[in-house]
Length: 289
Length: 238
Ligand SMILES: Nc1ncnc2c1ncn2[C@@H]1O[C@H](COP(=O)(O)OP(=O)(O)O)[C@@H](O)[C@H]1O
Ligand SMILES: [Mg+2]
Image 1 (cartoon, rainbow over the protein chains, first blue to last red):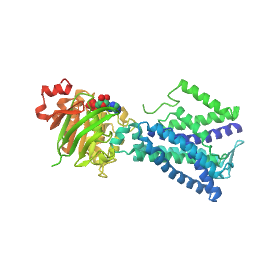
Image 2: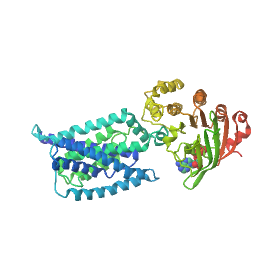
Image 3: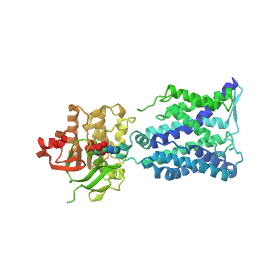
Image 4: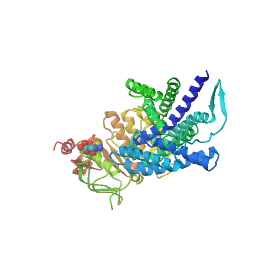
């Protein structure tokens, strides 16, 4: 019983991290037609800034986290301005942007390594309290992660469906030319989309940095998994993304428990290939044709 | 008096293929013009140049004396030029009301959305019945009404309709023609492209026949109606 709950907690934490990453990635994918390779380093930057504000500047973790999220929002504006805007209007713009995000990944990983050094660091936990349940324990950070992801993604859903800005994001996704003809500015939508995705990645990084040791490449694995989530859940709906994220999280937690850390990714990817062979449209039916 | 819209020696194309080869055309304040001509000869490309969805390679487009060729699509819209595109499927995942409200997003007159919405629903009662339905579930005719309705929400001074009756039944075509007549008094100028020549000549003052990216003939719509020669040009049997 205890180990079943431990696996479940771990599945929910992983699912939450992947959901935060995948929802931002899918937002960028569906509006810009771009896979953002830089998403992993954005996660790492979120973690490193939060660590710096908490550990070096001595701020309370919550304050440090909020500050780190704000820093990442500013970085997002720069990211959009320098990596997306100059390239996206070209004929093969999506490809150029992807190359740019790949390049920035290598660059930022180097800068993080030089700035923060190779030492293993961890962000202080939000709360040292743990919750024990039938012989298993969940840390405060794990609980925050489990709650934060669905709440944030729920909020994103409300914005996309019920605010003028969100509706114009969806309009641009669904019909670019007609959206432009009724006055929607793609550039404004891109800023919003990239900003939101960066903030969600930063939050994933802050949560992850409190659970495991940080490294410049700490975002690589979550990025890979989030990519799988997109294939699994489809990019058409946040519900699909959320479901895909928890399915992958559960699969990973269960396989790690039974087969160990090194076999788990092999099995997850093997299952993914089988699923995509059987259902190339993804596990979850796409909402719009 | 300078015309409302002037198009001068306009050239445009896709990659190496030149589609527009020196179009000259003007629309006066208060005028409705029709563009006729066989398919694939550049009518849509011309309209996309006007609304800055496509960049011309040479020539000029002026609206009340101001050149539009370096404007963004949104800036063109804010001049009051509203382009209802050919065969748009709109935003399949948005409701009819959301599509219409979005149409008013760039309307320079703030707070008119509510009034305009009820005007559009008066003009197209079918849309009012389907206001909570997703655009993707509408019939072809309803979708066209929604496209035009969303255009009206932007507060057009010059309205551009590209093939509004393409693929529609005669009954729906008549409904749309009646709607175009009804809104004629509320907009300052109109450009309409349509395969239904009687409709075009019926609602316009002048017509231009475009062939191979050039204006090959122009005249008064009233005189053109029923003309076999226009019909022949229109069908491309020159
Ligand atoms: N996006 C495009 N890319 C390449 N060629 C195009 C594109 N759109 C239209 N064309 C070509 O330009 C020509 C004119 O098309 P169009 O302006 O749509 O004509 P019309 O509206 O008169 O039917 C056609 O030969 C068409 O094949
Ligand atoms: Mg056309």
